[in-house]
Length: 158
Image 1: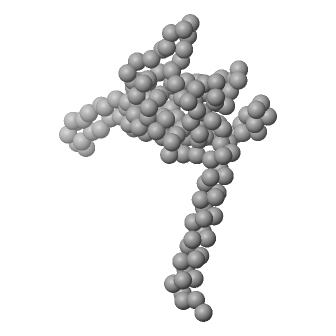
Image 2: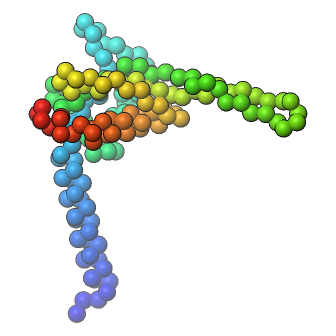
Image 3: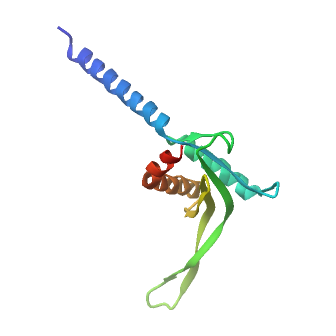
């Protein structure tokens, strides 16, 4: 008769194998996505900020289930990074009770503007976060939300 440790080890191995199969299966069902700059009239619209955001978004995608395509032609979906900047959303004020002393601090958010393209369809998105890395994560979350709502339509075009 097998010991409790042996039974537990076998159960753990089965669970890990099932989880691995599920992850592999999910990766195979996700569409390929290309992330890059906008190209107009043969010119690449890029600066250091856009370059850095492309790198950050690709890295965030690599942690998710998306398959990153090496070219626009090989991708089901194309994510074009158009701009990166700080968006000011009003200000936040702080004061000390009774002293009449206070501060007003602008509410600045790192924001990445992208265009998601599938065939001739385009969706402009602005994704923001507390840091540039968080803004890149927000881009991936926005693309995932769009994908979940439009998976059937995308697959119908393939």
